[in-house]
Length: 125
View 1 (tube, one colour):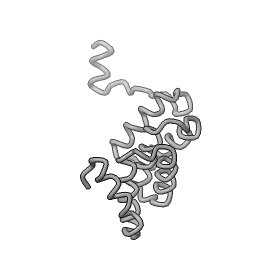
View 2 (view 1 turned 90 degrees about the vertical axis):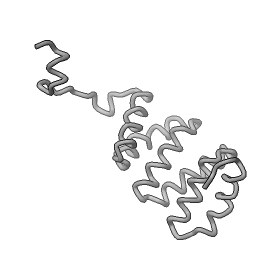
View 3 (view 1 turned 90 degrees about the horizontal axis):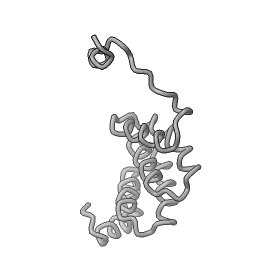
View 4 (view 1 turned 180 degrees about the vertical axis):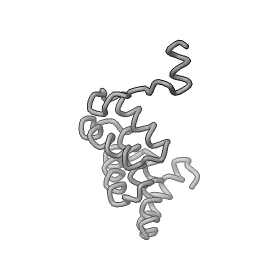
């Protein structure tokens, strides 16, 4: 049996590098994978230092906000989204997610302008 066949059968476990051994791109990829696997809190752990190291990257911030939202850390999601919108006020999805975050937190009236902004930019709510 060759190495590939053993790996496919699960005979040999594949060792993944530790988070701290990853470069930023690999760390983001792992965080995105964890997000898709619904391991939101774990994704937040990887994304938080990435946002700090890459403050000009809207994609990382948005994924962090989404991970906070899905893990019910609504205050943190709101904070990330407000910072994102301060820098990129034309991000329609960030407006929509902020509206949804505020609605989920019981502050729908406060989120209404963001929902209208997202709709004006072409997103359907």
